[in-house]
Length: 77
Image 1: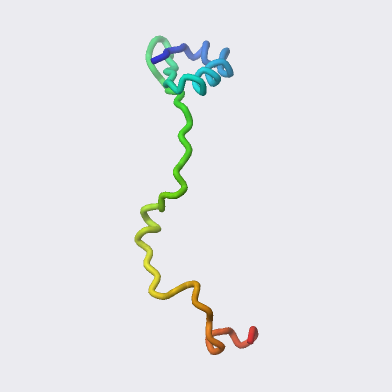
Image 2: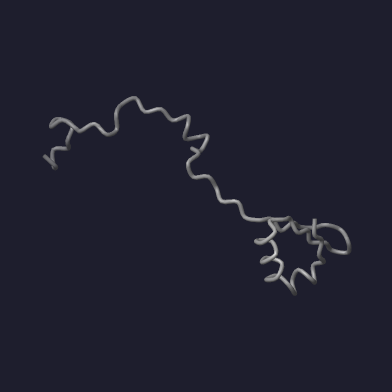
């Protein structure tokens, strides 16, 4: 694990980000020797996974089914 001071992190942010992308290791930022933050590689979200709340929604009909003539609003017939 790499540790850097706040001053070093501010001064060399571009270099630290390049190292982060290359090595994929966590960089810990310390103030007076005490860890205060972690720079971590970005992990993209998996878009194929459904949100847990959306999994609970149930539709009692086929939303792709075409409407009959009676179901269309009068102004659109």
